[in-house]
Amino acid sequence: MTDQDPRRLARDDRTELAEFLGGLPPERWDAPTLCTQWSVRDVVAHIISYDDLGPVGLVGRFAAGRFDPDRANQVGVDQYRSLTPDELLAELEGHLRPAGLTARFGGRIGLVDGLIHHQDIRRALGAPREVPRARLAAALPFATIAPPIRASSRIKGLRLVATDVDWSTGKGPAVEGPAEPLLMAIAGRADAVDELTGPGQPTLAARMPAG
Image (cartoon, rainbow, N blue to C red; front, side):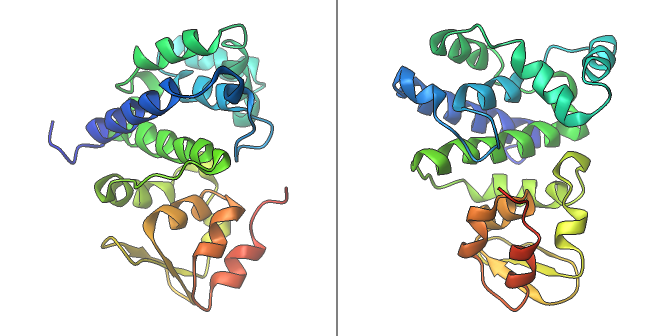
């Protein structure tokens, strides 16, 4: 496994999230995040909620969610509802390396999902960090095609250009900026769009989900 392997990058990001959460007061675990209707504890639960599922368990999870991805995600989150912050942190520390569904595509699911949700927590709590460029460079291409992110209609007809890593995609009016807010905007986080520039920025801003 190389230093640029998505599985290693995902593990490193989960490790940093666990370290951050270890210093978070218990009451902050119930604070809202950029994920609509999810608190910090809910986002942490989601990050690891697919790791222990085999094929049968995965089908069962989606069946319980009526084969709607958002409902299936909520089913997983609800399974951790009774855990205390210390217990949730212990679960995360026991799942630092993505497994199950999140290990698919060479670990890219775990990397993209975990990195975005880590930032959902950090940005909402006003606790910024410097995300290593290698993680962002590996996450951006997959984020544009991963079905759960639903990026295709959001970025259609635009050229996205990262200014701090060697990455761009698409054709049309340019949207430029650092890789982290670019990734978050691709994922539909409206608060990141103001950190981007270019003639295509207003179009991308108008395509952000409401609320």
